[in-house]
Structures are given as structure tokens and as C-alpha cells.
Image 1 (cartoon, rainbow, N blue to C red):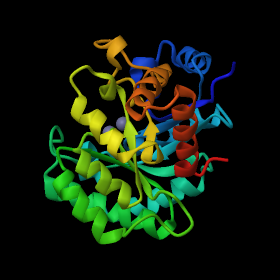
Image 2: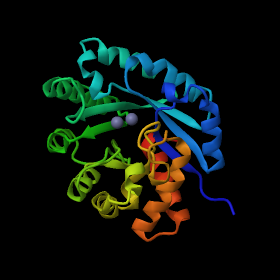
Image 3: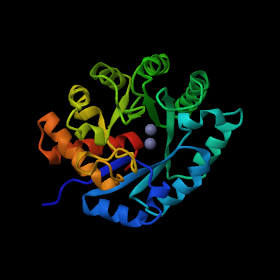
Length: 266
Ligand SMILES: [Zn+2]
Ligand SMILES: [Zn+2]
């Protein structure tokens, strides 16, 4: 029996944590049914490396080019133009991200984060490019920012972007989904004590969920304390199948279709 292909919609395989075995990790993922991945670049220093990694895996990888809130103070007048040029030069670059708000760990002041985030959201909307949103302890600010711009999904598409590594409440999950955002489910959804997060994904449902590892961070329950890698998607799919009361094949197939729609991946 061949299980449906799984997608890791958010990986940081360019991280030095993979320097010793990057291609092995990609091969191990494929053996576990995770045949596609999206490499996420957090700042302009990583853009070309992310493009090169995606280009080295044609048909199996895409990338997103962004400015993580950790680096939001690098946003300047020329940033949007440089981002446009980088997207134009790389058909593999399918999204803008990650971008967003991090009120938990980022050293950059909140108003600086918000200015960069809003300018990049506006650019993405103008260009009709999906966005990968990072949000930590900032949902109270995120939702009004999204709501002011996006009444729902763009015409003819299911998603405007993804709120990656979703960590909000069940109500916030439903609100993001209504605005046309998919929710990224990561290792924490498998943690024993995370009933509230599982409830958020139960409420948002399989139509609004994509799977991601955020590797090398956020290992699932079976690998806690270890480096995470894309093969962990299979464990996240199994847990969500349980949450939704679906056969794991169906949870895999639906979330993979969502990933393809989100990243406009044939
Ligand atoms: Zn993130
Ligand atoms: Zn990330």
C-alpha cells in the first residue's frame, strides 16, 4: 500500500544543524513518505541558499523568502524592491516569509516589527504572492492587522497564506481560517499536555491545516530534546488524524492538497 505523499511546508534545512547530513535528512523524509518540502529563509543572508536548496530538488522543493521578526530592524526603504528582484530571479521562491510578530523572544521593538510586517503584507497582497506568517504571543495584534487588509481568501484561491506554527486559541484558529489563512501544525500538537492546541486544530478542521516541522526546532513527542527533521511530518499527520477522527491516509491527502493550494504547487 502506498500512503499519500506528505509535505513539510516549513523547514529550515539550511540551518547549520544539518550541515553534516542535509541530503540524508531529505532522503529519510522521502522514505517516511514526506516527498516534498518548503525551505524557509528568515533573512536576506539566507535567500540565495534557500533558492539553491530548492533548485537542487526540482519538483520536490520550493522556498519562501522573508524577514523574520527577529531581523525586522533590517527593513529599510529598499527592502521591498530587493525582495521583488529576488522573487523574479527564482521561480522556486513561491512565497514571502517568514514575516510576522514575535513578542516572546524578538529583541526588535514591537512597533518596528509591526511596520516591517505590514509593509511586507501589503507588498505580498499587491503581488498576489502567499505569505508565511510567524506569530508568537502576538495574536491580539496579528488579527486586526490581517482583518484590516484581508476580508477572506483572495478571489479564486483558498488561501492568502499560512499562520505557521499556529499556537493560538481555538477561537483565534477559527478567526485566522476565516480570513483565508491556513494554520501550520507542528510537533507541539503531539505533546501530551497540549489538549488546547489539539482543540484549536479540531475546530479549524482538516480544510484549514497544513503540516510542518519548523526543523531543526520543535521535535514531535517521540523525539523531544533531539534535532527535528522533515520525516517527523508522519507523526504529526497521525496525531491530527486522531484529532479529526479520520483515517491517517485521508488526513495526509487533505493536508497535502492544502499545501499544494497554499503554495500553488502543481
Ligand atoms: Zn517561525
Ligand atoms: Zn520557521
